[in-house]
Amino acid sequence: MRLLSISSGKVMPLFGSHHPNYSTVASAINKQPVSTLAIPAPIEITRIGVAGDEQADLSVHGGIEKAIYVYSIEHYAFWNELLSRETKKLVQLPLGAFGENFTIEGLVETEIFIGDQMQIGDLQFTVVKLREPCFKFNAKMGYKGAAKAMLQSGFSGWYLRVNQTGVLSAGAEIQVLPGQRITSIADQNQALFNRGNQKNLWD
Image 1 (cartoon, rainbow, N blue to C red):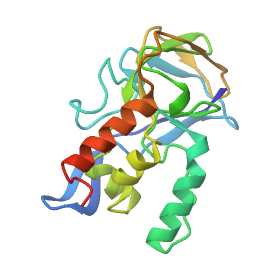
Image 2: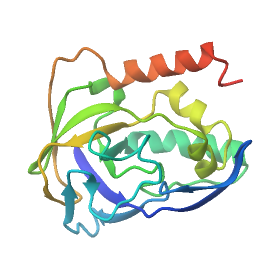
Image 3: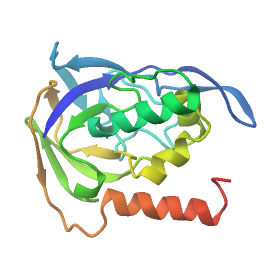
């Protein structure tokens, strides 16, 4: 398991026709890699996440409890295929495409639980919760069914609390230190998808 890239982004207008009340909305979902395997630049990690990274709505992203958003490279093939089919254009998503700060390899939602610790390089983090996609994710992907597809597939990613600040570079090894292991990210993901079905959010 390893860290493939670190990404950050600034708040800017996000355009899309995927919500009835918004033609454009502020978002920092457009992240760009600042440390990669090819150029493993050292990046400062603070209590509120990657230094220089921004969030438009702190009620749903960012802050101490959702400082770092993690996504697995293993899911990129699924999205490339889905979006290529739905948008009728060849899609090859770059790292950071989901608005994640850490793109990782070798660990997915069925294998990580709320309360687990992740040791990445010399720094330690706590797994807090899944990412809950919204209309901004639909707009970013250019596909109105993206949020539903994220939860239906189980490929939500998760948020981390920063327990130990310091410097990280892409290529750092990852270790998982298990907590009580009661609820996995996959369990939380399925529960949220089921609630959406009950409320007809996906119709």
